[in-house]
Length: 319
Image 1 (cartoon, helix red, strand yellow):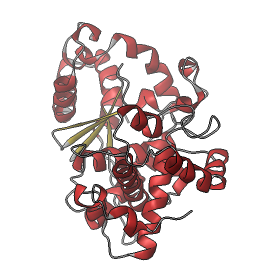
Image 2: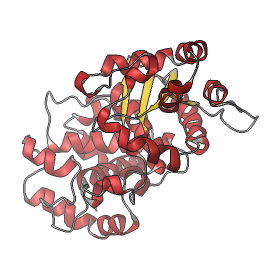
Image 3: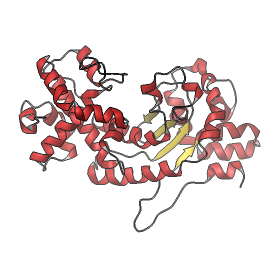
Image 4: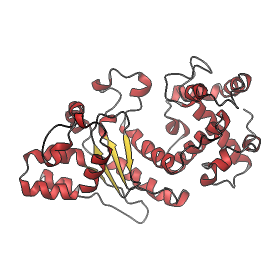
């Protein structure tokens, strides 16, 4: 099969017992392959990738990064070219991820029917820091240069906590979380650490519910050692939040220290894994559901719940 024919093939597959995989269309390979195609073949390929091309054009904020060219070749980024050989070598197929996305789509329809799933998903390479972009709620772009494995030499300048999350195993979790946060953005109109704990815990719980085979550690992006530290020190962490009077803090700095990516949550302990607030938030949601299982994911993700003064009492969280 020619490269052009391969790129134009849509991944399909269904059975009575399994979700139909979601195709991740390889716009990255199309851009690379188009340079050697005839004009007629390139036009056919361009038409087939048009929603992804339009989406990529709409989010371009760094025109100086683009290399001059015609057609698909005009979508190449200078600083992303170094990743092209590694993407080709390390990511030959995405069948496992496409299968997971099919299950995520079906579980979303059941658990959170108001969260739209993209009509088309495209793989690209770009210089931006984020790995995903959702454009107009209908097209998702996934930058494969963010999923080349923690041993990839191009990530050598990143700290370990960032490198270890740059694997293809993380892709379904990133997609699920992006869709949930896009549909249910955090409302900071009356933000406190407590409301953010509940929100982050609700997002983690929703991701856990829709990503097949997920565990708490997977959802939080923790390895076994980090998860063991969090579990073993859960009571100490909670007592530290209470003792430092952080629960009702509205300080942006406190939010950053508890919830943003970092090598450690030093506000709690120098050895605490980063983003420890998400772990505590998920534990609070688990406690709430143990006592009041009637709550839906939709309810948990809305300010009416996580910003409610009664939420903390309802959770009955006592580690």
